[in-house]
Length: 177
Ligand SMILES: Nc1ncnc2c1ncn2[C@@H]1O[C@H](COP(=O)(O)OP(=O)(O)OP(=O)(O)O)[C@@H](O)[C@H]1O
Ligand SMILES: [Mg+2]
Picture 1 (cartoon, helix red, strand yellow):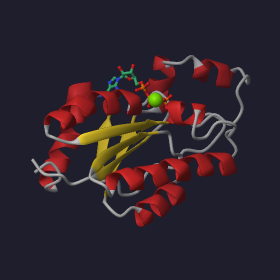
Picture 2 (cartoon, helix red, strand yellow):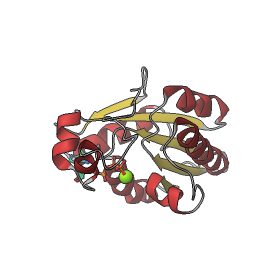
Picture 3 (cartoon, protein in one colour):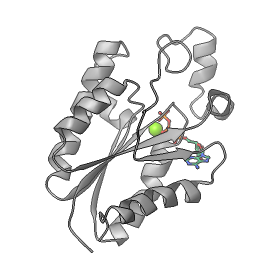
Picture 4 (cartoon, protein in one colour):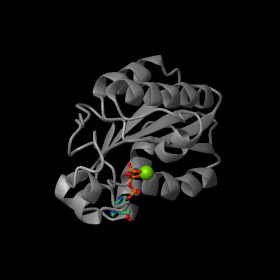
């Protein structure tokens, strides 16, 4: 066991599996002696970022706030797991540069066809019908990371397999001790 904090930054389309993996990994990391906080996009938008919309400016502000809090937590020995779409690579890179502790970007990849078929929140249907504007992957950009520390393919992997890939990377970096 060690007390190293780090930021585990999930990025990917809506329905790709960010929240699922964050929740799945939390008890695993706690069993390894870590303090863990999940900063989930939906919850953050209900409080820390209440009132923000989905323009590029508002999305960037939302993500910067999440990055700010993740840095505070991770530099004090917590594992900060973020689960927001975070579609713009420049802002993700900016947060990476500002983060004092290790920054582990996890690209939660799944093809648009797969996440649209899942439609876990019914939002893709609404976006296709034009009822939601600026919807990532449909009418708003998603910039995939060029060099994420870990990439998981949730269209073909089980939740356990994707989570194991993350754990393997953390172990390889000595972050779990
Ligand atoms: N390998 C996998 N990893 C994670 N989720 C998976 C995997 N395989 C299938 N799934 C399923 O994909 C769905 C992912 O939904 P989830 O709410 O986690 O997405 P999300 O990325 O948090 O989306 P949003 O940005 O809208 O919050 C769940 O129904 C989950 O069971
Ligand atoms: Mg989610």
